[in-house]
Amino acid sequence: MTTVGFEEVEVGVFDETTGDVTQTFVWKDENGGTVDLTITGLEPTISRVSASNKTVWQSKKGTGQVTSTFNTFNPPKEDLDIVLGRETDGNGSSWVGEDTQAPNVAMIAKASAPDGTPVYFALTKGILGYNEIVINTKTSGEEQVPSNTTLTGSWQDREVDGKSRVFGTHVGEESYDTFRTSVFPGLVTEPTP
View 1: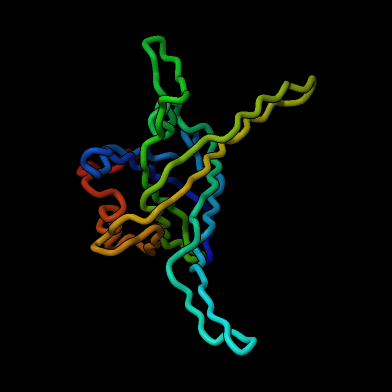
View 2: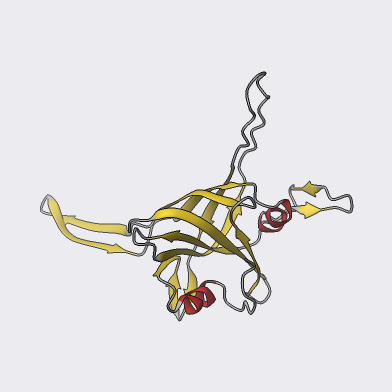
């Protein structure tokens, strides 16, 4: 599907006890502005049977290992602490270590079709990570340009409407609320603009 632009991402955090999404974060503009999102592993796994020196049967079913790479500008620290499973102490410092665990999340990315119709891409359940931090010196006489934050995701199937689902798309505003409810089960509040 051809898209133009990339407006925002909404990330929902699962409660591990209930299996419901209890909160979401909308990242856009100067607070987590969306730069690009690459989703890989969507092609079905191929199974083949060979006989008489040729392929005599094959099947493509499901998906491969679905992963994502998401570049975002300046996502709020408080949101990242929750989404990445960082522990925050009484001083406002964030920590990761052997005993920290990133929660399961779901994500909906909003783009547009060439005619301006909104297009939504959903990943139903996975874990986001922040693999590296690069800190560069300021070069004399040059304007310092902020760098983006790159989050990687590893995604798995989750039951949606009685079927195993890892990725979904929805085109247009009609029935979007139903699509969003499927991706963020149990969430009763509307996203913050």
